[in-house]
Image (cartoon, rainbow, N blue to C red; front, side):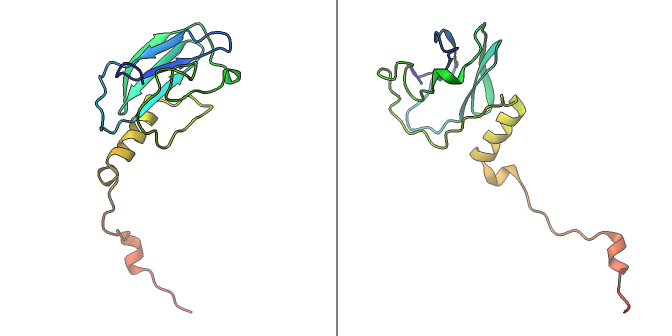
Length: 131
């Protein structure tokens, strides 16, 4: 995260010109759920489960480019002065629904799911076994 905005960069192994910046100014001491996705045509950056920004690209992200998290692509400047927890790297481009669901699950797990009372189907009320 650079200049108080989340940024997502991808490289094709030659250059780091594919990038997109979020729109939200980040505040120190606040928990955020940030996601970056990239394909051969689009780079997206999500914050707290919502798409913040998207950009077209002509560069396909390459695994050979390596991974840098929390710093500028040189790895020596603009270091992120915070804590990164539960970093996930996937070979799949997650959908916006998946990203939103993951955010809701992590930001408010008690509100994400509900355990109701046990239900008993009508047909089982009269089921019995005679040996």
